[in-house]
Structure formats: structure tokens, C-alpha cells
Amino acid sequence: MSTDQPRSWAGLRLATEMPLIMGVVNLTPDSFFDGGAFADSASGLRHAEQLLEDGADILDLGAESSRPGATAVPLEEEWARLAPVLSALAKRTPRPVISVDTSKPELFLRAWQEGAQVLNDINGFRSPQAWQVAGQTDAALIAMHMQGTPQTMQKAPRYEDVIGEISAFFAQQISHAESHGIAKSRLALDPGIGFGKTLHHNLEILQNLDAFLPLACPLVIGVSRKSWIAELDGEPRAKDPEARLPGSLAGALAAARKGAGVLRVHDVRETLQALRIARGLGLLQ
Image (cartoon, rainbow, N blue to C red; front, side, top):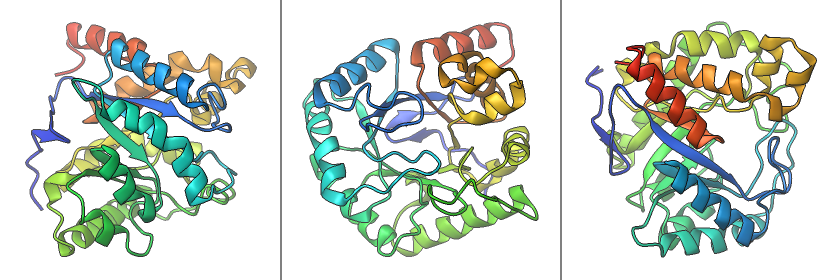
């Protein structure tokens, strides 16, 4: 498999020294970090606008929580949360690059038709008809690895070889995509930090991200505010996601040094500053 790294994705140029920044817009009442803060359309839109002002390259709109133990949301309820914000952002001039975080193939076409340029599937396009439906669009695609479902993923995740198993999953999904006429250049891969992984698994993935580079797809990494930071820190205050910004920045820098092409973050301005300083110090090249 070619090790040549892609130079662009989702219409954006990929640079080795600075990953693209994907700002998280949670349109749910039950997100693990900012659940409910942006659940109504007006506040969700204001938050998206702020992330753009802060420097986000991509906005990732999510209308169904995927935190551990989250309850699945019916299709029409998810769409009702998502559509007003997606539609408003798609009418902006210039239009931002909009990603939609959904695992429902039924929403893929709706979101794309409404203006989404990226489909971000935490289920890795494993659902029946997922690749077939995605192939009816020209959207960029993110296939994430998850062991289990949000309801079960953190109960007892186990791997014989976490890097090898995720790599095999990615290779399989690339093959499935190509068999449905989807060019590999449309794909990005997310190893799913915190999605069916223990602290040990998460650390092994982050320390060995470059093992996925031979797949020659951009790597999307989301470490922002997640519970592995509290586990590694060990300080009681870190149990509160609000106290995990420093750990989020450290994780983002580690991922960038190992070849991440896109960082999915809640704190856009702070992440960009950390990356710029790291680049200025020669830590990112």
C-alpha cells in the first residue's frame, strides 16, 4: 500500500507542520463535555460562528451524543436538532467546511443535500448500506474505529494487538469504499480514542499513530476533554471535563507530532496557539 501522504482533503490543503482544526459543535442535551450548552439552534449557531472566528478549518456538527452509555436518538429527532444549524451555516458567504457527525446512513444524503461536505461516521461505515449511500454523495468521509457501540464500548474493551486490529479494520474499510466506487482520496481515518479503548489502548494508539500512515489517508484524532486525561493525571479535579484543557493540548501536540492531519477539538483558539508555539520551537516539522 502506498505510503505517499495526501496533500489535500475535504478541499483543504494538508500541511505536515500544522494539522487542520475541526471544531466540535454539540447540538445535544447530553454531550459529556458541554451537553445542553448549545442544544438550541440559536446558541448552536453562535457557537459555530465563534469557532470559525477562533480559526477552525472545519466545523463538526453532532446531534446525537456518542459518550459512553449514551442512548440512541431516533432519526427524525437527530435531524430536527441538526438541520437548522446546518442549513444556516451552509448559507454563509464564504461557506465553511461543514462536517456532520452521524452514524445513520439515512442522514448521509440529507446532510449532504443540505450543505455538508464531510460525513463523520463513528461507526466506521459498518452499518448496512453505509458505503452505498455515501457513494451517492461527493462528500469527504471519516471512518472511525469503535469496538462495540456507545452503550457497550467501555464495559470491557479487549484487544490482542490494538494497533494491528485497527489497521486491519481501516484497510478493510478502504477496500469496501473503493468497491463502491469511492476514491481513497475522499477518506480520512480516526482510530477512535476513548471509543472501546482502555487508558492503555489510548496511550498505545497515540504513541504509535505513525503506524497508520502507510494507509495513506489523513488521520483524524479526537482527544479533547476526554476521560483518559483524568485517568492519566490522577488528580481529582481532572474528573471534571472543564479541568482537562491542559491535557487536551498535550494530547493534541503529541498527535500532531506523530502525523495527525486533523485534530477534532472543543478549544480551537487554545489548540491553535499551542500548535503555533510548538511549530515556532521546532517541535512540529
